[in-house]
Image (cartoon, helix red, strand yellow):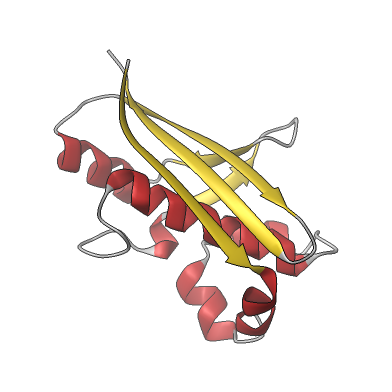
Length: 129
């Protein structure tokens, strides 16, 4: 395995709290699964803030930022049965990463955390043999 990229992002939760009041922001930034699962969350601000940070961290680990075919909606963060967050590898995201690094297999690792005022995400992108 080879580390291809590392990304981290810190978000001020109040900023996201204001943005999520705008339905257009939600539709542009979050995928259908994220929006569906948000309905079950009591603290929507922190839920969306962590996901926003994760999308930014992933774009940093790839080295492109959000542009050139990589868009917020193409990146979805879901949780497994134990609650661990992970990147859902949509077809668009998968193709983007493989083309950018000229690889066939990769893994994405994600860690999320939040406090009252901030949310943070850390991502590692690894080439699989």
